[in-house]
Amino acid sequence: MTGICGRPPHPKISKTALGAEKNVAWEYHWQIWRIIDTLKKDKVKIVSLEQTKDSVLYTQFKPKFPLALIIGNEVKGVSKSALDRSDSVIHLPMLGKKESLNVAVAFGAVGYCLQNMDKMSE
Image 1 (cartoon, helix red, strand yellow):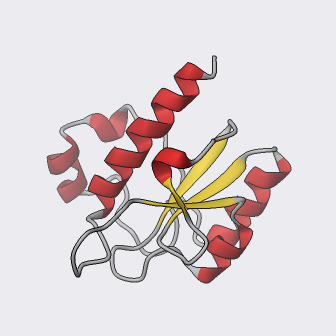
Image 2 (cartoon, rainbow, N blue to C red):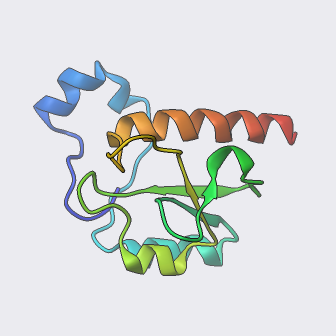
């Protein structure tokens, strides 16, 4: 997690997560570019979930693992700094006038797909 975001321990997170926050490993870094640079040194591919003119539909994306999935702020999306440092940018198809989904919903769809792609590559 980076920037301005809720993070454990916090009563609202505990209520929503129902204890899962105690079982999921997480780290917090104020500046996203620092953690991206560190991950890249460790040969982790950086993939951002954002609609751009060059983004690839998430179901057509061919991931290389290990990878870190960046999901942006619900209002502002993924920062330009993070997009510029990304190895790939993928998007969910959106119909209608809205161009965004709730962050949890977007992560659920893409995270599930990527997890299954990782299992298929084993």
